[in-house]
Each structure stands twice: as C-alpha cells, then as structure tokens.
Amino acid sequence: MKSSLIILTRNEILGIKSLFDKIPFAQFDECFAVDYKSSDGTKEFLEGKGIKVISQIKKGRGEVFRMAPEIAGGDILIFFSPDGNENPL
Image (cartoon, rainbow, N blue to C red; front, side, top):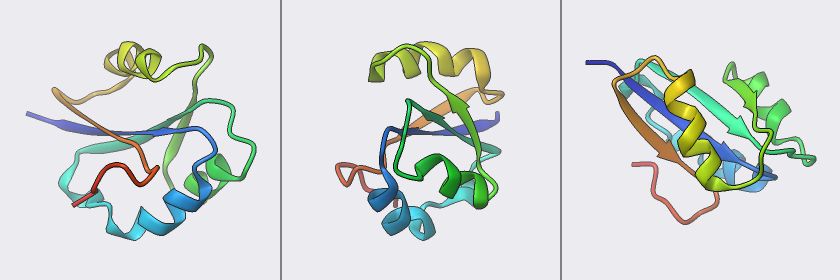
C-alpha cells in the first residue's frame, strides 16, 4: 500500500515555516499541498522546498477532501494543516 500526505494551505506561511522540518516526509510515498489562493508566500515556500502545490479553485476544507483522492496516488491519504492545530509527529 502507498501513502500520500496532503498539506492543506491558505496563507499558512508562519505555520509551515515553523513546522516544515518536523513533518516526517520520508514516511510517505508522495507529498503535495493543496492551496487556496495564498498571498503570503506559502505556495512559493513549499515549491522552493520541492513540494508540488496544486491550486484549489473552490473554497473550503471539504473541497480538498473531495479533490485529493482524484489527485493522490496513494491508497492511504493523510491530511495535514500547518495552522498549529495538528501535531505533525
């Protein structure tokens, strides 16, 4: 079985910078971010770290849950929001 880590973002530059090095990327077969119109450098930061960023068209966290299975190659999908409400470990 393959696993996919999906990072949900919308103007999360402070959180992603703070948590990025704590995220266990090596535990996943793939990782990508789904971003909804960030204007604070979140998208550019992730791309600079080699993370693929997919633009979310429709607003809402639920939309990511709907679209991710169509994008992800993994059988197991793990969703993570770098807003400080979830522990990446």
